[in-house]
Image (cartoon, rainbow, N blue to C red; front, side):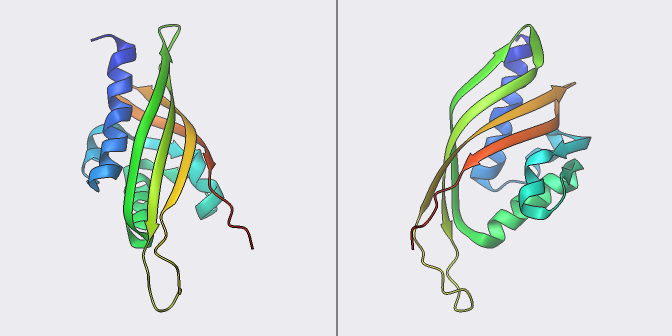
Amino acid sequence: MSQVETNKAVIQRYFEAYNTKNETIFDEIIAPDYIDHGQTAFMGSPGRGVTGAKNDLKNSLDKFDELNHVVEAMIASPAHPDLVGAYWRGSLRPKSTSDTHQSNEKINLSGVSIYRIQNGKMVETWNVIDFPVKQT
């Protein structure tokens, strides 16, 4: 398998971790010095390392009953084999609680993520996510 195909497989495993709610996959594919630049917008600072990736998944599972992500397209080039781009779609269903009075309405979103991979492990991630804006 080429470097490009190997790195694309790492990204498929990343999405599999979310879809199966299996944080142990991160032990295989996340580098100890991993930085998730996308978490800055939601958590105030980048996610770091395997623990940061696991915390992001746990945070999602605390807020959502259902999460599902589908990779629509992946782009990688032998000229830059350490970078993989992914266009993905997802759906989330917020947990209903008496405290938040949230509806249990499904949220559809999409995003573009760029991943940098070294030695078969993710070392950096950048995300642009299109969250729907509710009209009031």
